[in-house]
Length: 385
Ligand code: COS
Image (cartoon, rainbow, N blue to C red):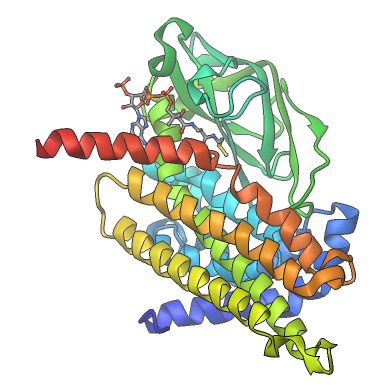
């Protein structure tokens, strides 16, 4: 399939692919085994300008958009979803600043993010507020020219590794979703520490930990958008980011498919390579159909996002849901093609299948995505009535 990528986009794909093959594939099993954050690979990605892809040129970035980010994310995910999650979570944490930051905030933070000198994380989830994002309990109470943050964020990707955190907290609990605000919190601020480091089923190269705020004072200049806009900041951020999770799904599925195909060509049973059996051929064909459909959808939604469309909520949820369900299905079937070998840690499929599962969970479970999609449909029905 030709997706008519322009020269820049092809160059981004080739650069990300080269980094994936030369720097990520050789160490992915070790990073997974040791649950080790990919510090060296992050430096390589920074040197290749990968952190600046989606950041406007006036703030030191390359001024590209969602499609370019998806292309890079897909290639990294094809090699290792743990590494790609560390990279993509940086974009998730940056979107609140890009979408809602003042000129001063953008000038202060974006150049360091674009160069990869500083990593970012997004802090929304809490122990009792996952799918029910408006149920967060962390508070940010105004006190003079500051906000005083108290509470704990859970399962924060890049937690501990990032220098900048975009955090959603309640400034007025009585107002529900309309009482939340988004704040920029820097590592090292007194009262801000890191809690439990999580031990995960997959994406073990990525860092996941708690953010603990105890009487942590944040200047009011660090609020993003207006006071009370935190839930909208979070939702618009997720709208922007979910297509990229879809791209992660395409990458994982592609990687799993390639492993299974190579294996099926070399594995001899009944005196023939198993790829000559129709049962295997049909499984591989179904994988190819699903991957191509997912890629076509993710790229076209990314182009839709880049067109400046106002309402991308439903489209990005569709891309995320379809492509990540494909990733799980393809990883599972690819492992089945490889049989006992796929189940062993000697091959990367075992890790790919463990990794794939998170895609149906993070940035909103695929059940929540279906709610979001249906809300969009209801809005459209009533508009067209
Ligand atoms: N863009 C702009 N505004 C949005 C929005 C969006 N995508 N989604 C919701 N809103 C607005 C609504 O219009 C509503 O505004 P009003 O109060 O002015 O009517 C407000 O936000 C509250 O919306 P809603 O009532 O739909 O919120 P709910 O509490 O029912 O939650 C879901 C909605 C389930 C969609 C939301 O909580 C969600 O996305 N959950 C998953 C969160 C997630 O992805 N977690 C992963 C953690 S980050 S890795």
